[in-house]
Length: 298
Image 1 (cartoon, rainbow, N blue to C red):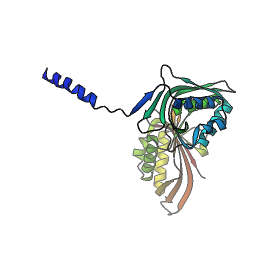
Image 2: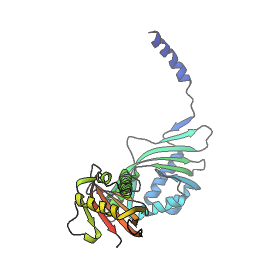
Image 3: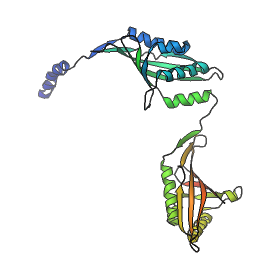
Image 4: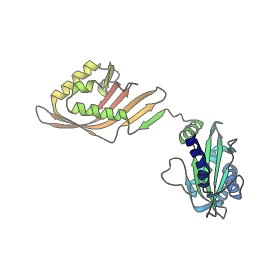
């Protein structure tokens, strides 16, 4: 009971510690500027759009490293108008908030909308939730816009409406690329037993010179690795460019593509050869290589 009395006694103190920094409105001339921007995007002109922004306005999208300009905004609007019939509707039951902070002459507007675009050729619909924050100055001009939406989903919908199907993703950094580099390091060191552990037991191996023929088995590939180690006292693979790890959505599979300069020193003659090498490794869900393609310059 004593503890409860202390807590109750603190409640008025906590209430008094709150500081009001501004006023929030549900309707305001500042937000009229924002609703006008939506109308312009739907059917307005470049001049209309430029007329509601300051010349140096900053326009941010999700994940942007730097702000876009009014020129960028105009280009975006024109592209959408040429390719889509677009509309903005309120995300009911949400309502906009307009905040005027103490000491500020302008206002911040916050709203929650649904953006919809219907492709003029395909008839496909692109739709997504849109949250915007705009700073409207005392002259009724937008100085800053921050847009929040699911860029990934919107991008996929746009591509789909344009007749392009996204089948996967490309990564230049990925754990499977790390595995590839480890495999190459084991081969350079002549550690064939360790190299073998990266492959599935039923993995298959193809070379450009034998493409279309019966692929090698893992046991047969081990023999060629050991033969290369015996033949070359130095096996130096220098990466050309960088590997790509590609996820294919249609087959739910992963492939790593890599390019190398293979510099070998013959164990008997000391002769150094340099040949271009392209490797293709397909991985299963357990991260094991199921097939390897070797394309070596002849």
